[in-house]
Length: 147
Image (cartoon, rainbow, N blue to C red; front, side, top):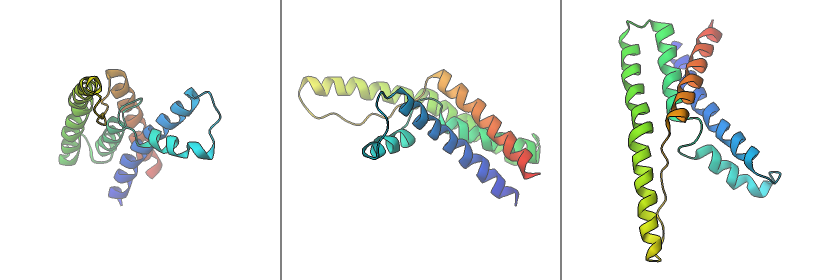
């Protein structure tokens, strides 16, 4: 049964982070959202990068959950912590660098009037930190709610 709660923590961390992006994106728009903007809303939910980091939130949620449920000396917590570290590092450094390179490549392509390529956005430190905090809170709440 604990595995279900671990997955609830993981999924909840990601879903909350992605819906945060939707709410923030819609709040920044001047116009009232209409059904025609459904595509825009979906784009906010599934976008990479932005505040907060969904990758950091879901990995932090499951790591904190495992730390509380199984103990910080458990093998599963060690595995979760190692995995979270890799994912968070990737979101902050690797994906951010790839995104910046994509933007630079698109600037070069636009000079030649070629089509542009989609750019995968990474995260800045603030987005990652907020994602980690959000995920930590979610993991803690799921642990508490499981009773």
